[in-house]
Image (cartoon, rainbow, N blue to C red; front, side, top):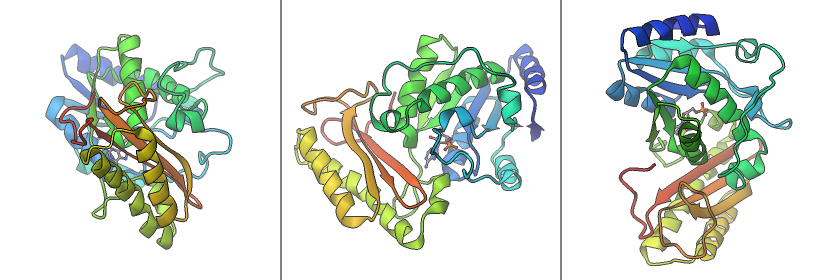
Length: 290
Ligand code: AMP
């Protein structure tokens, strides 16, 4: 595995790879790698000749009162994990490498962001789209792998790729969970022991909602209320949002008659956790999402 820290070196390498007709798979991350990330890496091996993973905690996608400074970081451990999962090129740029001077141009995401995390985190998806635009150019990826744990990100990136004509196939990978159902996340380390026990109820609340749909419930308001009640009863966290929307267009709907997402965000003392499920109108899980 080659560790690359500068934009120039990465471009030299990816130019050569393209000259040799190599298919490039790309897994963007913010590091503190866990099985959610490594599943994306393993998936890339099925599609591409070469795997590039980036580790970059992107300041543009954090709000002023968010956890940019204390986002967990462990370069050495990440390097070992990446190597074990067949990463060929690990791109770990500094902020100066990615944003060398005051930027003049940034991407603005105009749809799919007025709800869920986009609503709670203004500017977040502009930051995501801006850094990905740069990373897509630098890596020259043919395939890019994203986790459905961040389903709104998948919905936004799909349109970034389509609208800006990137020749990249987005592969969306199902959420990887702990044995008890908690979605794996770098931020889980910031849960207290009690919160860790409670956090499993985010997933359980979503499963309860799914069961309601299997039983024939078509009213989003009923389902949202049940999910809220479940989380309030079973956790000490503060609900940021619970919503049910069409997926991937992320529109509000009055009646469940299409593929939907039920998404939650809950603020615990030191970690804000998100989770979601994407299901068909009858409550079954779609085989292919996006
Ligand atoms: P992050 O480092 O949190 O920015 O995540 C990098 C990529 O890993 C994103 O595409 C995430 O959606 C994905 N990811 C993070 N956690 C999980 C998970 N539990 N299951 C699947 N993908 C995940």
